[in-house]
Amino acid sequence: MRDPIRFDTSLPQFVASLKAAYPGDLAAAEPIVIRDFEGRLGVILDIAGADLDGLNSAVAERLGPYARPEDPVRGRDAAGVSRIVAEAHTAPVLKIDGVNLRLLDRRIVGADWMARPVLEPGAIPRIAFVSIKGGVGRSTALSIAATHLARTGLRVLAVDLDLEAPGLGATLLKPDELPTYGVVDWLVENGLSGTDGTFRADCIGRSSLLDGISVVPAFGSQTLAHPADALAKIARASIEDMRAGTPVALRDQMQEMLNSFEATGDYDVVLIDGRAGLHETTAAPVLGLGAKVLLFGINEPQTFQGYAFLLAHIRERIPGGTDWEDNAWFVQAKADPADTKIAQERFNALWSMDEGPLAKPEKLGPDDLELAWADNDAPAPLPKEPVPLLRILNDERYRSFNPVENRVQLDEGLVRSTFGGLLDWFDDQMELGK
Image (cartoon, rainbow, N blue to C red; front, side, top):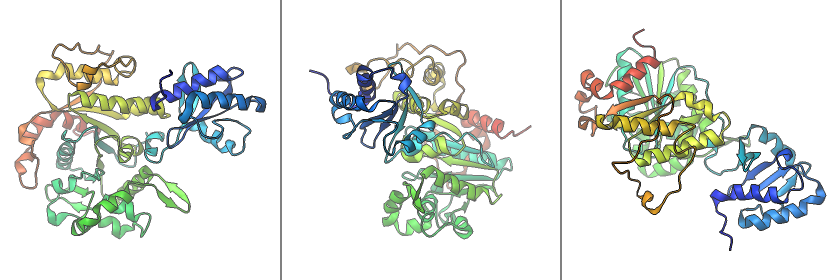
């Protein structure tokens, strides 16, 4: 009895069924594969009308529920196909079982993860702080970087895109400094009542921690006054807008928002706090805003598993994905000096295109699902050049970070001893001291 087809095997099985039944050279037919919202597959290729019925039957029998219900195989001359063929010119090319094909991956959510990355920087530098897991000190590091840059005289705008677990507003602003609105309000109102200059000003709070720090929190004082509406606003802020019948992706809305703030001429650098995990709202800071991206993680299995998913997707599913890597850096948070070597080797293996888990994944046994390393685990081989790895030391003094009430946490000597590697990176990127 044949094993049932699941999502992970459906695409290779689809190609195998086409190779077995297609009357000719499948590679020369330039197949365009469409995976629908539910995961069902169809293909457009060069095929004579007389051969369609047989190929459709073979595919439907092999794929079962993973085949498009009506005619999974269509010729290039079929009705409505020309638009799809034109769209496929920008789709990623995959090589499966020796066959190059273009994949159009339809999604109800997660569409921003499929768009080509924005590599061109904006009018002013943007730096995004993202992580696979929460609790790694990402927002703390952003706050430390903001104060460091402000001390040099730069005007810093910190924007909280972690809509479901926001922190920048409470960290960098006193309660009476919180603006009326925030990012969630912008993403709701931009498609309804509009976002003019007055609304924009009402989204910005000025921090009294240091001159030069401004904050756009996820939520403003209006939401705090009406907390029962917060979840309703989050639901509407995280989806596409429709404008004159045309969808506007979430990352394009976020791009418009940042462009509006930057157009005031009031800022020299924008620091963006992204959402932890691989949610749709994380795609914008990672891929869609032209930002330099700091990928935070601690030296534990969950970090490397999550980033393996992310990097494999970017490299294999997005046109121009490998070019994005030049704009990304790993940050080892809560680093222990004793594990410097092994952590470096694990990040090297994760980043390497030729070695490590992305190239030849091992088959896991039951014991591997515990997500724990033994002390005698052999480190992954080093690539030719170690991946740049910024380190933030594990410091109990920053376990609870509240600079509004504890200004000692912003002491320059204390900050430098823990966050020195990160701050040196910022000095280099912003060309400070030159």
